[in-house]
Length: 244
Image 1: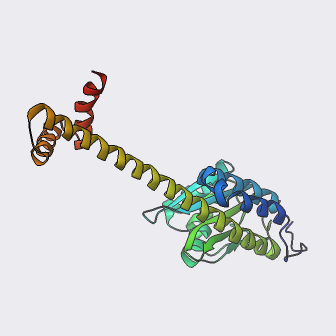
Image 2: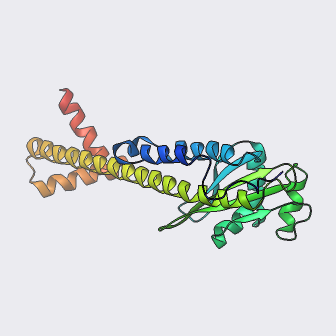
Image 3: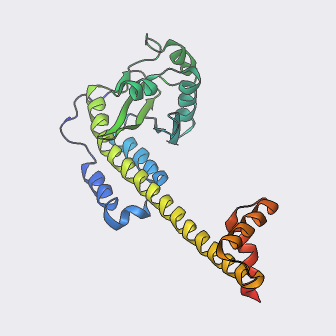
């Protein structure tokens, strides 16, 4: 039975989502990963809309492809994989049109007929999905699957839309934090490489009586000969010197 009688104005888990949002702010933000946030979203969505037999999240990757990044079980992964392979389905429509989609019964649905026919054999009968949208665009979609027809009603759809709006902010923040962390690590690596190259040039200048430009040219030649980067060649030079 659908939950049309539920009050649409407030989510059952507003308090929990607010607590998650608080955890994702400030210094705590860097401790969360996109993966852990998605797992939490899947867990909360399944409790928020109790008629769901399966919950999943699809994200849009850096190349624009759709990827199921978190799923509560094989029913979700199989249904999603079929959408990606066939190029049609409610989740893909939600992402492309940036609007919620609902199927009351795949056996009677006239949209996405190939996908509906393919998933009917797996026991899936009804679906609701909503995009996760922020001011930066659409980050992905949350989808709920059920094994009985008409499991979801209009109130469930409204609830999922509200839930997805909150979840989109969490995902966007986690993604931004991971990008910042990756940038920070690359910056640290760049500084370490620069220091290694500076030390190696000094070593060559002292050992072989070269000026700075000639020492750098020598380092580049060593890197080409060894098939590595200048920093790797520098490390090979300075490590024995350090140990010695």
